[in-house]
Image 1 (cartoon, rainbow, N blue to C red):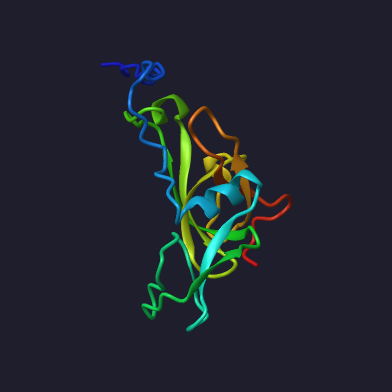
Image 2 (image 1 turned 90 degrees about the vertical axis):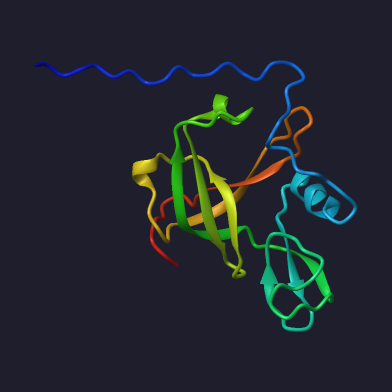
Length: 159
């Protein structure tokens, strides 16, 4: 009995016109500064003026001390890789047309961890603790600029 050839699943076509998209944030008055900064190539996080801790995703209160005395702050854009998964199949539009892609959690230099996508690095080259820097996926139709992360050139070691 010989080996049975296995082929990769076909790449799904793009979503039909008017199909719902599952990658678009709901931009409101509170999150607008975050998305406006992303359009300018800047990553914002929130910092509590009472306990001093930074957090991400943006919330109107501090998740550590519950203070509502939180402000927007420009992040350095530096991070290290905490964990990742290479996604080979996703049925939700428009992700199916992007496979394979690398979903990740990064630890920002300011402390919070952030879910994101890694770009510019193949799965076998990824290492926990490798140095990353923020980049932005350009706006696409209704989609705003999204922060993504890429390896810092010439690194791969924990800071």
